[in-house]
Image 1: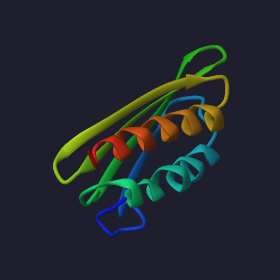
Image 2: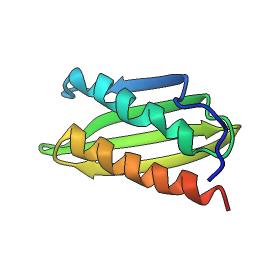
Image 3: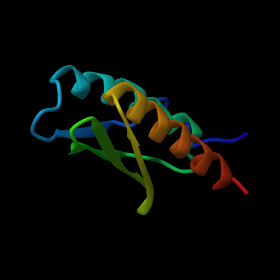
Image 4: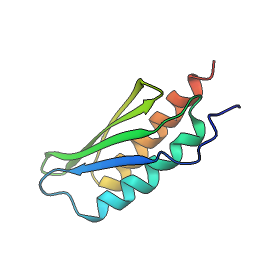
Length: 100
């Protein structure tokens, strides 16, 4: 698999909604930034938004810019870790498919 050469997305902005633990910011950054290594072209920017969508549901929306092309992911789970991990797996698969 050939990739763009970067090992991390240089600019990952993580936005936390009300009620989201502050530790979610670093966790999301650490899980999303390394996705650059799977991108077929440079991925200089990602925007991550974590919100609560119910009393026990965390929603994560991610937009990764791959050389001007948005790659979107969305997931929900009972914890921010599970939600971020699910969206990370989703984006990983989408980035790999872009190589074809």
